Length: 268
Ligand SMILES: NC(=O)c1ccc[n+]([C@@H]2O[C@H](COP(=O)([O-])OP(=O)(O)OC[C@H]3O[C@@H](n4cnc5c(N)ncnc54)[C@H](OP(=O)(O)O)[C@@H]3O)[C@@H](O)[C@H]2O)c1
Image (cartoon, rainbow, N blue to C red; front, side, top):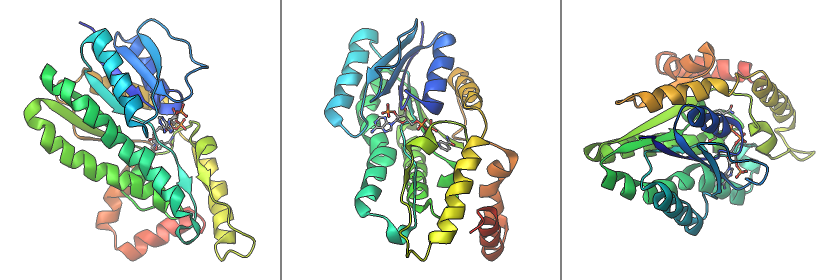
């Protein structure tokens, strides 16, 4: 029997790549997002409207899949937005919006997907975190915080869901070439901002890092391996070597030195 997968944030970037990979490999994929009009359904791949900030929409989407397929075997929470600014200068409404999508979005999704998974006797929930969820990155502090929150949520959820045969996995990507830069909320510093020079350097580097990032394909391949595994690991970091080792290094290195390296790396 083909396994049924629901992916959020699957109209672009990593989510879209995972949707294509899984559907080509005999999974039935419901690829969701808000902007689905430019996407065409393919065999095993159906695009459905889903905004992770809207509970009624999530409920309708989950009900539709259950009525068509009878179950959801795997949920991939990939919907997310980037946000870059000096914390001192950011409008707190934007902070709420980032948490509403990156963090609350996952809570809303799992609350609707866990009951049918539990009734079916198991499943997999895969959350897309970030290396930025292991290390607080300067001028991405809000984004980092949302991803730290996803780490805590995933760790707790993993233990809560174990008796039901539901595996929780977190994937922590480094820089990947997607639309994340285009979709990122960037708060430009005002002309008299004390952060102006450092932020200008930082924004330049941030977009360069994404342009030079790896292809989304690597994450697509990884999801395929995780989907095939009976008992996947809890945490998968994926990216360039220096990105993957960064969370480990911070625990062994004196924090003063680690912060110096971050400052140098981001030219701030
Ligand atoms: N690319 C990287 O370097 C990188 C690194 C680490 C982690 N990540 C994480 O990977 C995930 C995917 O990012 P990406 O790089 O693929 O970026 P992307 O190309 O910008 O894709 C973001 C996806 O999120 C969806 N989305 C945004 N707001 C939404 C909402 N309210 N409801 C439902 N869907 C929403 C977008 O779809 P619609 O606009 O159609 O709704 C889009 O499909 C994110 O969680 C991101 O934080 C990315």
